[in-house]
Length: 169
Ligand code: FES
Image 1 (cartoon, protein in one colour):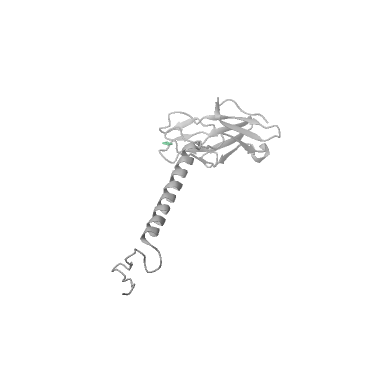
Image 2 (image 1 turned 90 degrees about the vertical axis):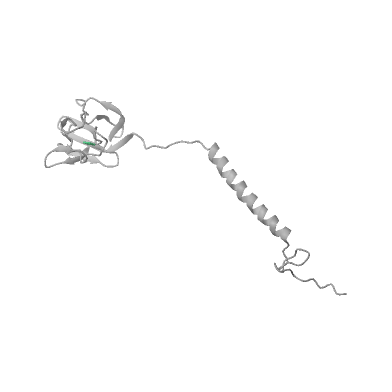
């Protein structure tokens, strides 16, 4: 009488042990623990996201435009990151939105023609934002412009002002 165990066709012995020493029960336990671990991690991530504040951080609407000396008299300077024109005329400074009042395209200053032109549908504006032609329903708005305590230009894009309001420096 011998105690020789014959492996089954799946490589298991009659006791359920595989040839490499791992039982089916051990294997299933490890797979189950792995699946539970992944599910627990997913639940932790979802719970963390649920309790995290859902806040949208937008760029500030107030920005510094640098020293007034950066802008020569009779100049129109386009600040691309703010989409604003800083205009300096002999009477003072004003800040004009570069966003077209038709459908919101960003306009371009054309120094040769001394106009602000919209590339989308052809609206044209004077350098002070007054509409010349095109489908834009309104002139380009002016934003409040002031000086900081240390002498830099400060523009507030949330505060629209009348076109006649200029900053004398
Ligand atoms: S968006 Fe400027 S003319 Fe249409």
